[in-house]
Length: 472
Ligand SMILES: *Cc1c(COP(=O)(O)O)cnc(C)c1O
Image (cartoon, rainbow, N blue to C red; front, side):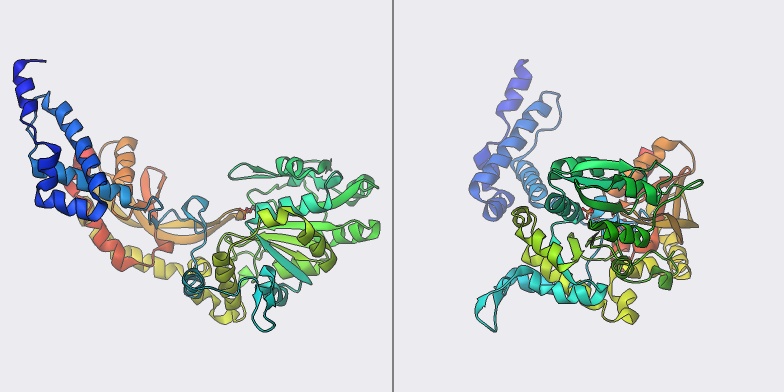
């Protein structure tokens, strides 16, 4: 170290001096003396390293400001709010379904006050967690009985472990799916203690395949909704109804894992008809499982509905206690399910359906409206156009179906994919990160899920067009 830089270092302000600046004192007031001093020490260490390069010496106030910024950054939730403009309505990585207002209010109450979670207020006795939803679920699905667990993966695990522990579970080879987050049907079966018996082939499975496989060691027959893919061409599958009659005849339970599952006919909203949960029950499955936060539009949860005697058995499985849902999600589920009692107002009240049912003309008009603001925020380096695009449902629901939508295509006027990646990063760095998707040389912002336009605009103001230009 040269004598010059050594003397520069000696002139750096001390931790105490930084703490005693007005900003340092305010920081200590807000985050505590110890945390503030620690953050200033860190800022000082950085300043020492930088000073050696001959950069400007920070003043005490600069150190306090750095420390405050660091502490504020650390205090901010990492579960950041984002604008989901990916075009995928139920985006698993962005938290899937948004809750209805009624559900949010129900959760707020359950968070802040004591609630009769497992308490029968009338009789003054212990009650049951499932009582809050059982009759409502049965009313909406036609099932005899119902229970709720942590998610649908847990529902499948619990069913397999209860009905097929040490026994065989029969599944078509065409339905041995893997869904995101390493949920693989064969692995779940193994962990549940069931022995997987595959029948049929990848593309074709016939009634005789099931009939040949069912025997004294069979615990259950499982039918799985092939959520995220579809086999087309020379195919054959045994319908749920037909499989139910085979299972009944042989005296083994049929479990139908619907995955997403919907309580309403999606054709009503211009989507392809997806067999509803009620239909799956009516088709004769002994148990049906589905998610709470996919098409249903509620919080993360897994439903097991169907035969009362089987559900009684499931309730006796000690594993159920480990997979149960908490009061907050019960509250949200109950409020969400109640909305289904009035299907006419569902698309207005339930965000998931509201997004899916949104008229493309409405989205296109919004795109036209936003072009000037975006063009201004991005500066000359980017072309901004209102475009047609396609949304998808997401979370494995209707995997091949797309919904005509509209959005903004942002394209660098010159440069390459790098400029596009830089722009995507810039949008993610906004106070409320904006997440789009890169498609065919453009960053596309699908506006289907943009309701908070009033909040979107000022957020854009943080996009320094100079900054983006420089990066491009
Ligand atoms: C999504 C899905 C699951 C898992 O549901 P989670 O609620 O995400 O746990 C299980 N089976 C199928 C067929 C699915 O589509």
